[in-house]
Amino acid sequence: MPQPEFTADDYVNPEAPEDELRLRSDHPRVRDHSYDCSRSTQELDLWKQSLIATVMEPWDAHPDLSVIPENAEPGPSLTLFVKERRRGPGYVADFVYKAPDLPVTVHGILANQGAGLGVIELELWRPDWGYWDDFGDFVGPSEDDAPAAVSAPITSDVLRRIPLGQIVARAQAELADQSWKDEGVTTLGLGRLQDGSGPELAPASVQALENASALAQPAQRGRPPLEEELLHRVAHAYLREAVNGPGLHRRLAHLFDRPEPTIKDWIKAARERGYLSQAVPGRCAAGPGPLLSHPQNGPGTPP
Image (cartoon, rainbow, N blue to C red; front, side):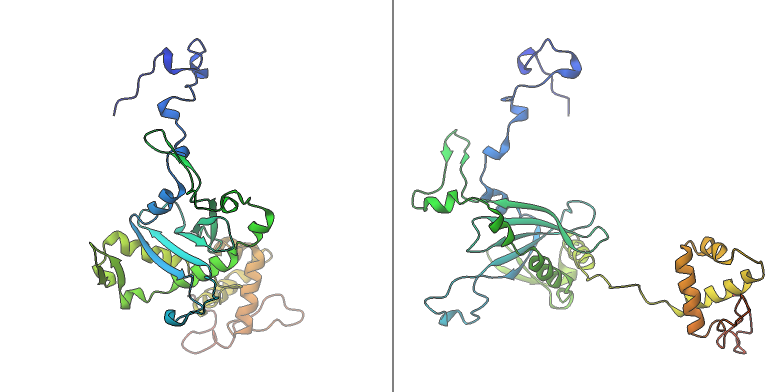
């Protein structure tokens, strides 16, 4: 596509040096599109090429919709949108949260970039806020709406009432559930609902679900358990290097590409599990433990 050609009429000051030329604020290429559509349009766009999961509905507290008390009030709603086209590294899903006591709609993006599932972007919408249409007419809220519903400010109290912790926890539980692989996914077809199992979904949809599920898995607390094979290798490396004198932990740290404190913890675990003998007073190095002294291994046998 050819680059656009600009004339003197396009710039604020056409006499300015080339690196200081600025397009007019009303130039078509620098239009502020936030005036051209409502937030309702932005919310509608979330449904495009997305897999949708309803996590919370306003009447979840009343499963039997036929016997809802007259004085019952609707609760919050939470909807997840797993976009087939990922937004960036670690992207998991978009979410929209609404509650009757909030004057705004909460839109956020969930991601996991190595520190667990969390909110990486957050927007507060006023869906009924005014905008300019294609004909140059201002489209504002309905005259029937109460003015207070439109002008209510976003105060610190409103921000405190947005339950981000609950949103992340409920979204994580929903996304980490992989029952869709066996039970299938309900998709919106042309005027009807279609039940399709995982393999029958489009490859992009399957990939999006698998990515979201993997990235939403709860993070393990603490250090992962040490495998027996690793301790077996550590014990043999220890016995080989111990005869070379001082600097044992430094050499093992270089060999396993781990810091020395980690190496010391591994050696301690190898002693406790029987791969190395327990430390003896007056003796720096340990010998083979009961597991390495087993006839099938032999003392000090290389891995």
